Structure formats: structure tokens, C-alpha cells
Picture 1 (spheres, rainbow, N blue to C red):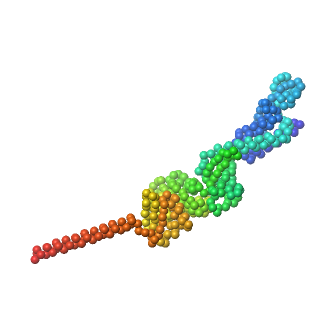
Picture 2 (picture 1 turned 60 degrees about the horizontal axis):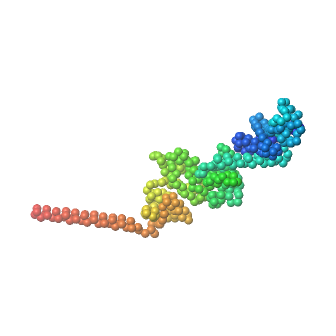
Picture 3 (picture 1 turned 180 degrees about the horizontal axis):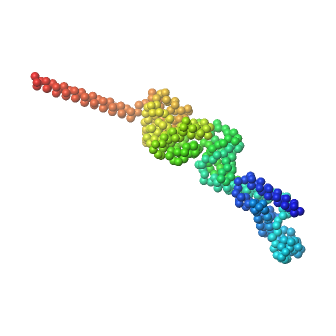
Length: 400
């Protein structure tokens, strides 16, 4: 009988060790869950008023449960009473009416109660995991996490997050946060941006994104040390997810080339980000306080290709005139380049070729002003020549 009890106790300890191997919960949390589960089934067996004590020492592989029982001459209630002869084996000084702590034997629990205890233990562990997951990720919106595609749940993807300081968990990558035409395979490593952390009735829910512009900003922080240290600052990111992005950068210290720093030697740094985004094209734009220069940079064109940039500062409208052969490049496929440049600079950009662009009033005014200045210079020159001729004539007559 004693050997069978020891076997069951050892089996319980093995089961607990197996559970600990499948969770990253701290030992104290795990022990608390075991105590709650054992106490629950003991109270069901001995009654809700029983003062059950649990003593667990996993390092010594000891799990003991005790319940106080009243010493009686003739036992009538097994769950609350103990015969005097049995009590004196436990405590030789025991007398009728005393309370004696009796160790609970696994033999006393039936199969149904044992199964119930296991369910309670698993429930406690899941609840503890949810609380730890929420505390781990709460307030981390905007951070990058690394995970692996586990499966698809309809159009949504389930991401198995890498092990954190606390535990491993799943994140939801909604279909709306997956770039168009991107289809991942099981096991793909993905870096995602945390959008939201929810604590719901069914547990925690971590929602991540692969389309948010801040994902690119965080990737530059990870891949470019100067961005992480603040020597180069990523000001604005706009995206057409899966196709093209524009990133405005500037140097905060003199002597640093923000474009070359972000591109890296032979494009190594930016190419790492491009590969992570499944070949999404990235234009790195240098910010400039002059809107004309900034708009030209945002269109990813060199100065000779842009003939002029006319600004309507009140309505934030920029009329950009480019050479005829660069018009399609300036607009981009389906207007993508111009649209992203407008979002980046926060100016409404109207692009026209040199041959079709009307001459602006400002240009006409400048041309009229130049013509007036030229005419004035011509008249002044003619007057000077006439004066010189008159003076020469008077001098000649006097001499004669």
C-alpha cells in the first residue's frame, strides 16, 4: 500500500516536472498554481471548511498535503475525524478531542477528482501565462518583435513570437496588415511592429503589422548604428506597402552624410531592410528646409531634370516643371512616385513637362523685369555715347 502511494506520488512529481518543461513560468508562479489545484481537490474531498495545508519543495521532490482531523473514539466522518489508535501512531501524545494534521494520500482521491485537479492546474497555468504575457508586452506598442509564421487562420496569419524574457506566445497578423501579394510560408522569420496589446476575456491578444510606416523607421534603428545613436534622424516614412517607400533623413551632427550612412557600403544596410520587406523599393531622401529642394529630392530627381518649382505657400501647392523626357519618371507608375513625394513633403505636387507647362505670372514678371532692365541699360548706354560725341564735337570746334 505504501509502495503504491509512493509510486503515485512519484508519478505526480514527474507529471509536474513535465508541465514545467513546457512552460516558461517562474517557479514560484508554478508552485502557486500547484498549491491552488491541490487545495481545490482536497476541499472538494474533505469539505469546504477543511483547513488544508500544502507544502511543496521541488528541489527535494517533495509535495505534501495535510488536513487537520479531530481525534475520536469511534470515527463517523472519515473526512474530518480520525480514530484514537490511528492518531496515536502519528502523535503518541494525541488524546480524544485533539486536532491532528494528517497527510493526504493520493489513494484517497478518486480518478474523477484527480482529472479535475489536473484541469484546475492547467487552467491556473494558462491564467498565469496570460497575466505574464500581458505584463511583458504592455506598453510596447511601436516596438519590433521577431517571430515565425505558425499558420494561417483564414486570411490572417498567426505569428509564433520568439522567446522573450518571460515566455513565448502568439501574435495576430491581420490580413489588413499584410502587404498585398505577400504570402508567407510556415517557418518564415518575420520582423513585425506591435500595433496593439489587448487584455480580453479570452486572454491577451497581441496585434502586429507588416505595413505600418513605423516598421521601416524601427528597422533603420536596428540596422544603422548612427540612427540608433541619434546622429542621423529618420524624420518621415511613407509607404505603398509591398511596392515602394520613401524615407526622409537628416544628420544631427556636422560631417555626417545621412544618405551614405543609411545606404551603407555597397548598399549593404538598406538592402538588409529591403530583403526583410520582400524587395520593397526604398528611396532615401535628404530633408532640406528649402521646400523647393526638399520637393526635388522627394521626387528622386536630380536638379537638371527639374526646370523649376513654383510654390503657393498659402494653399501648400507646388507646381513642378520637369524636362519632357523625365515626366514619366517624375510621376512614376500609376502616379506612385508623385503621390509618395506629396505625402512625404506634405505639399500638393502638380507635375508637368516643360513643353506643356504654361508660363507662370512670376516667370512673366521676371522676364518683363529683365527686359525693362535691359532696355534701361541700352538707353543709358546710348545717352552716354551721345554725350561723349557732343563733348568731342565741342572740343573739336574750339580747337578750330
